[in-house]
Image (tube, rainbow, N blue to C red):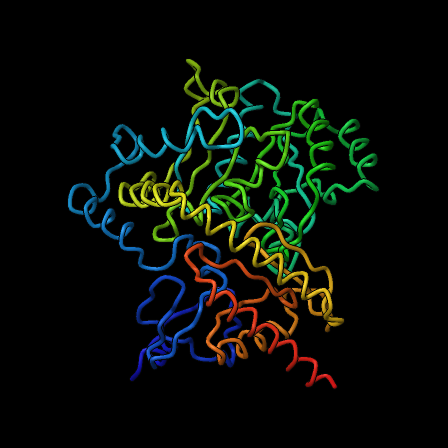
Length: 426
């Protein structure tokens, strides 16, 4: 029995309808931007394997660092113990963050990093003897993860449909524009003293459809939010580490967050690791003689030494001049291709920020379950490119090591896909 058949018999894959599901494609190895299938076929990974792989697959530098660390210390409980990789990572990352951050709290992944942030913000007010400040403010179309707190602050969508009655109430607003900013500011003035925190994906809403919004009205909104004393939580799980052209998307904003959530590219995509960093004001609310005001949260693999080592190695590569040049090159190529795509009448809402390029194909409803998604994936795979649209939203987010030849091949395949879709329709 081949690997795909064995998988089909025992594994439940994520975000996959189970009835009549096709067998998954066995991947036997990966190098750089390429995935190698069991049948010898290669695929350009145009989405960095769910946005995590920054420097390419099986990067020898990261692999060697992981190997060396595994020989020394693979895991230790992080309550009462510490180790060099965790301390070194915190020391290195805090000065790079977009704001005045004081402490790093480690967890396992993106969802857990947002769970930590929400609990940290709500208990901040509880510790301050202001439990009435317990509302959470979030954007419509948001996505912050699949655990219950993360689902609660995400838009009510197909991802959360079965759980709506169990999710806690959230105050949802639209992303700010010059047209709606006044109404949003009025809402903050009316309800600000009951709101504990505002959680947002800065400038790009990832799984909600790669929706992008402008920095200027966002700064105006955040200024009002901060004046109301509301804790600002930036979910940079997807946008962090250069994806938007800058190291963090929050760097495009004049207003800084109080808490920031990181994962995905944190380790270069090699290991699961989450970070929730906070400023000193948040941290000091927990520095107290009252044991009941302890932050009772943790994970078995908190600050795993191997994962922290992978993150340190990824930072080494990010700080290399070649990496910055690659980010600029990809951003410029995407910008040129985006200009070309404007001439396609079947496309709408074309947008680009840094290494992220996205657009909608005007066919069917703008939703995650649009049947275009599996069709585009299959057509692209047949051409040696891996794309995974969010419904009818097609996007690119390649690893930084992608060659210009590989990037142009992705563009060529997109042109081919658009031609095929147009011919099928008519």
